[in-house]
Image (tube, rainbow, N blue to C red; front, side, top):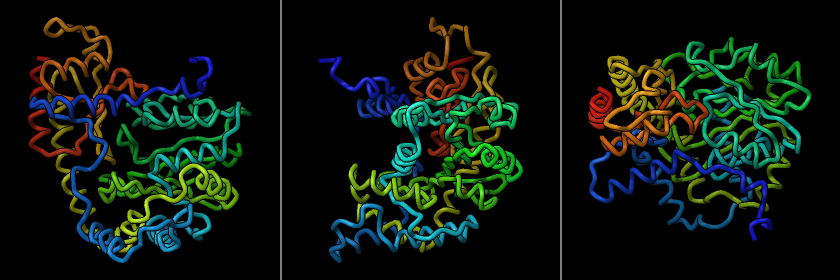
Length: 395
């Protein structure tokens, strides 16, 4: 029976982040006082006016199918947003609305990749990037980035990774898991390389609104040549605290969009209709809830970074965006605490969960085994308590 199952899909790895988050939730359900730094979602409720729009849509009977690629009014709202926020001119025919930004990424890779193609992925990477590339019958080419250089691609590292099989470069700014934000000059360098070598850019901008230092620049805004090669990925989850509503979207050249429309029409049909109406309200309505969320995240980030860098044995850089901190645990590798030897990030995560009831995401999930990821999408009280426990665990 085993040999009859999909060889390709048997090679897909499970999500370590989801597994650890699930384990921490079970411990909490069992009455254990767990502090979790695993969350990949804002700890705020979806703003009231967005929830009200969903109820209104249901009351009006707007509960049937929409076009497979999404509501025309939502596509127009997205076009308006891209123009106003990102200086990008797209028509509704360039937009596909999907079941979350992850679905948009999946569709994109399915549309552009063929067997033998290579897709460049930065390390540390968001856990799903390499697996999504493999699902598209392509090969992920992992390009190491360094903490000293802000966890960013360099011209040298990109040029070294490019060959005749290179189909696309995945760009994630602001970045999960590092919080890195690329500057306009850095994006110009990447754009120049992409245009010269005729390589697609898959620009994942899902954390776009959550920037605390600098500003967000979409690489597609740097000229018509790079815009034609760029697939812009975004969604409602992070900016509007709408993770469970599952609405993502992409903007791309018409030829790519046409293929994606066909894929989605057979794979899922339209994304959730009620969530689409709520998304129109989110994009067109009051943006003040985002500002309040950012204000809270800044305070948490500053406290977390300052505290981590006072704890002997661990350190971190200041992230410019998203809501994650990559903590360097290199100095702990090989050490033993309470009879528990730390050989890598998985060991350290297990040690913290078992001994001080703190859940963190091991860096090995992101291809960076000498790090752990902490999310500050949790209350300041939780952050204070959790870091106090981590400090106690490694004293």
